[in-house]
Image (cartoon, rainbow, N blue to C red; front, side):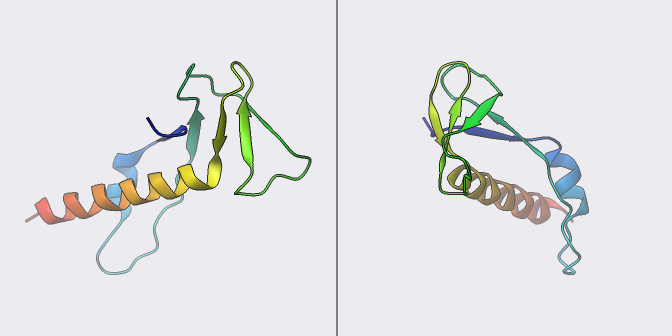
Length: 89
């Protein structure tokens, strides 16, 4: 099971707006979800957290790393867009 889960708010919108012509991609908002309890509230474990610092779930204390989760989700989103573009006539 991955460290945490990031769920895209609107993957279909992302796929529709991405083009092979090199147009700018749209910004996507994510909801961070704890893989242990499903909680969506997190606290930074340091005063000035960076992308490599852990976040702790407020409900169960599970630590996740936002930078790693964003990288994983971006790779999944790219793969989904590429598959969708391949299936278009």
